[in-house]
Amino acid sequence: MKFDVLTLFPEMFEVLNQSIIGKAREKNLITINLVNIRDFSKDKHKKVDDTPYGGGAGMVMKADVVYDAYQSVQDQKAKVIYMSPQGKKLNQSKVEELAKQEHLIILCGHYEGIDQRVIDKIVDEEISIGDYVLTGGELPAMVLIDSVARYQEGVIAKESIEEESFSNRPIRISTIYKARSF
Ligand code: 4H7
Image (cartoon, rainbow, N blue to C red; front, side, top):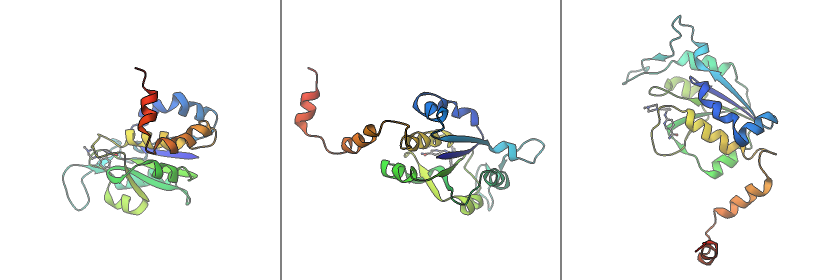
């Protein structure tokens, strides 16, 4: 499975070189390609922010720059995900659904987000990792990648995933009792 991440801060994704996800990348079980949106700015100062089209407070990420970054990785079969506090809340069944995809393109927003015209044109799904505001979409993107990558063949033992479907079920009080160590 391939993840393309469009971000202004590719260095933040260093953590995905560690532990189980790092191993999975080494073994080429998953591919994580980081695309620096700033590289697509045509401005001599490498400007990436702009006032919102149609008005509004604050700044948004420039439409043409984000769109050009997207074009560099675009493929008809890919699903484009926008990490946003307004998105649909991520849960385990959504993770399982996304894990079936071959290619995910993940957009990480900053400032007040990304120019709405680009969102309307390229985004398939807007996803939130919870009801709180963060400074950027990078941490949510990492949460999504970690949760989805676990489902790829060979990343973790099959039994661990099977066991989880049980761990979500109600547990008998007597079972909890037996497990306590006092
Ligand atoms: C898109 C639009 C995701 C992305 C706006 C992203 C929380 C989540 C962002 C914004 C995110 C989540 C930019 C609006 C920073 C607020 C101060 C990035 N926050 N932000 N502003 N819950 N922030 O998944």
